[in-house]
Length: 389
Image (cartoon, rainbow, N blue to C red; front, side, top):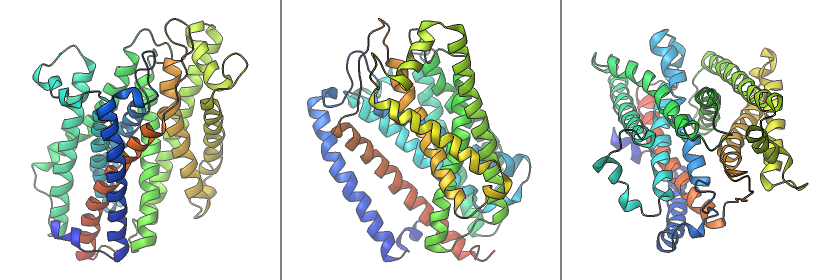
């Protein structure tokens, strides 16, 4: 099926060339970071995790969200997702690759990353996070490739793939749960010290990941004419709505617990995120309020059934949902956890231009992997005439 990579219009090759140029340019910035160390980033002694780790956290959720397609398809035999499930699995592959790269660029000396495997610390959550991510990547590559090959030959997948599919469902929950434990297991960070951190992570993943998939499939439909079907879109949008409602509910639970108890360690991070410090709003405060507005706006559109599938309003709502969840998990989570610090002091953090450039390079690698994998999938579906189903 690799020959499908060479099939495509000029715009496809121009897109790949653009991504390669971005990767090359951002790679030069990373070489500068590799030479001069993490001092080129906005991180410091007090803020040891920054944009890289926040993006790692977010894309673990995007990878885990593939279960929202796999679970209905194989557990409940919902056939409408059959046309899009391969795209969800391949999106999970690209997301996990991005997660790994964000970890690599976050390391001051990436050549030492093999020490995690060579000298494992079995009581470290990071060790288990590495294991589940590698396992999930392998599962999705094998499952996606084997099922796509079976579809190409118009036969049923081999029987041995079914246990791997069921295992991948459990594995999807585990990767984001273990990632949540990385945060919730740090007792000095009150913003993360909550029993529902894993639940919050899964809820945000199960709404933002499918929303990203839907938006990408809309672009594919416009460019290639491939349509996953109205019923599949309607069902997945409903899943997104329920997951987003749970995500917002969990956040409100955190607000109530912090504000009603009045415990300073829980109140202060939220107050700093939304109202700043010393009478001055932080730069992230504007983002957090924008996330609140977009979360309310997307639910106002997606909850009413008559608006949920509107061809114009639905993409707008999905974009707002993705942006709101990214701000919450990709910005607010890290800054809220480190501000104030354990000594009740404020150490401001803002990503530098070089830090953002390296992150964009990782995004470009993910987009490149996704484009190549989806090119293969679309080629197979065109070959078996699934475009006209």
